[in-house]
Length: 280
Image 1 (cartoon, rainbow, N blue to C red):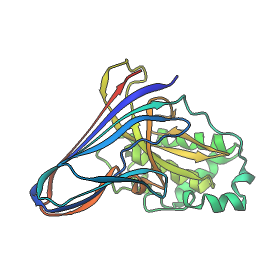
Image 2 (image 1 turned 90 degrees about the vertical axis):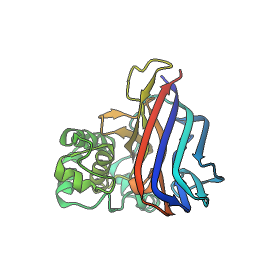
Image 3 (image 1 turned 135 degrees about the horizontal axis):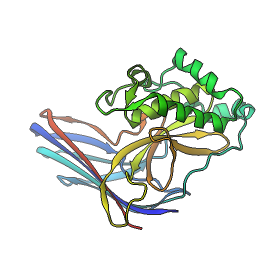
Image 4 (image 1 turned 90 degrees about the horizontal axis):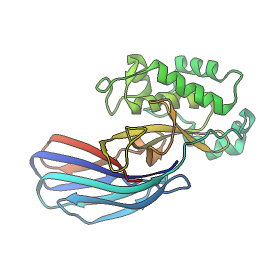
């Protein structure tokens, strides 16, 4: 069953002294594809500014804007209405020999490489070898997601935005970003191309129509096992109508919702809210 969902993502900055120049990139616009249809989407700023949109290397739509008038506050509001698709089914058409083919290794090498967030780790590589024994690539992905779900405790505040998968593994705690990164370590150690997906999650599986809930910025993974398909290791569920896909990349570094540079006073506060409403 598909859903129609409205998402309002608000980010606010306050500065101790006037900011005179600010250059920003927002990755807050949901993607449109076979699983998801974007009905309407806009990004607005206060103070108002001119913006332009482009698609980055990974296929994510980016809203770029800059401010040159002195300001003490910056507010960015991204509003979207999206129609989401059915629950994602594993793609089982690929075999282990397929994943070792020269053409595939060349095409998806960036989703097999290690990164600062998804580093190579001997202990986790040994876990990956055990999880893939005697099963298909698709079942190995599911095994990795379930293993991470069982091993990590969801605990905000234990890790930070710059924490790597191994940081979360040592702490045995983390948030959705850490669950996704740890899963990616296992999948890439298996030789399965895998990528980080950011977006939103409606928090109620049986959400009522027209009810607004405090939603979440969320992260999950996609794996290539004959085709790309997604799974949510934080909740150990397939990606489904409650998931709204925004951006993808090798890790969090490629999909940060809002980043930029500025000159002026230090930021004294950061407020982020996400409101999600099921419309149909």
